[in-house]
Image (cartoon, rainbow, N blue to C red; front, side, top):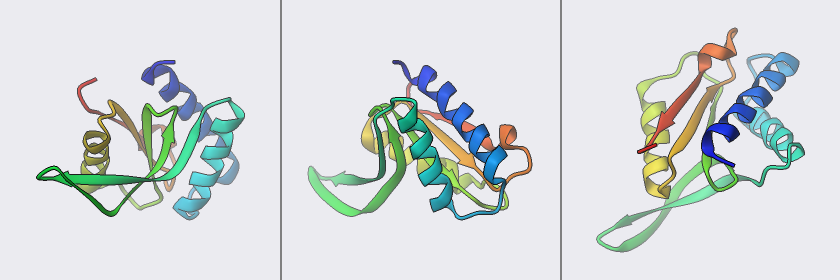
Length: 125
């Protein structure tokens, strides 16, 4: 399955969760629900995946954690904030570069209109 196919299913699951739970909950609640929905669809889902950083060929375990990794291809970064900021996009792009992944989805569940709050971030896709 390709990144865009996974992305389509992730968006569908996010809409389902948002319709059921609504905005205003903690990020961890949305993360758990989204991981559950994606596993129910048959995806391999990892949560809170440690992301090391390399500098001068030295591996540093410095606490980067991506929220969800689907089929080892797509990173999902979940937010529950008033509005997405530039730093949120940069965070996801950094995770994509550090893991050499091509596609990430930034999802802000604290929104009245979830469709406008799901952003694709690409790294050489």
